[in-house]
Length: 242
Image (cartoon, rainbow, N blue to C red; front, side, top):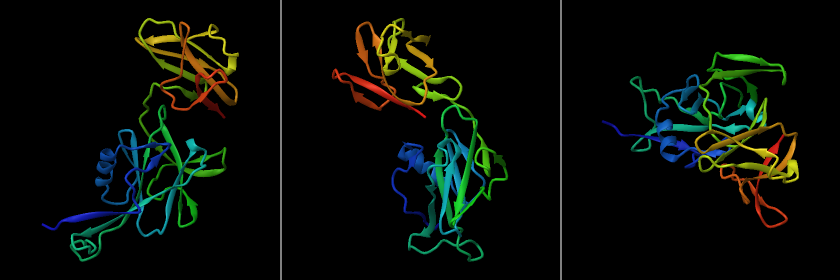
């Protein structure tokens, strides 16, 4: 039996996905499952987008990122152990495939996106589902996904910022920040289940600094890596509302 190698042109070990990285083993397993260009495949929290390898360049851009970034596809080239193109039963080289693996954002039920193929913006030619984006005045491709939730501080469309804290069960955890002049007694967080505390605030646009308080102790948000030092030398967490 011939050994077949998959050459991933331009592929690095980890590819940025919506600000995060896919664990290498999971990424390799997802790539190994790509056999041909087809409509998007949802696998757990990930989506595999593919395009035909006849294109010189393919990129993808997402509505939830306000179409600010075009993520380039990678190319799979199938070669045997001698470095020769793998051919099918008729002697024709197997199709090269372009692909991009994206992570589904939390609390999302539909992904909307556009592609750019060889310099031309288009909907996904392999995905029959599309809709008109009235806000941006263009057709976009759509893909239904299963909703999941991550317990972390996040910005919600309808309720503003959902602050989240994991601490010991049964404690009093308060929230303070630049939005309330650092008053540690104004906002008490709600323990929604043992050790999980949260509170939603409708903050206006801007950059806000905050921390949690248990008794007199000020602690930064362990679920948010963005931090700064305050004027008094303490560590505060940062969230930007747009």
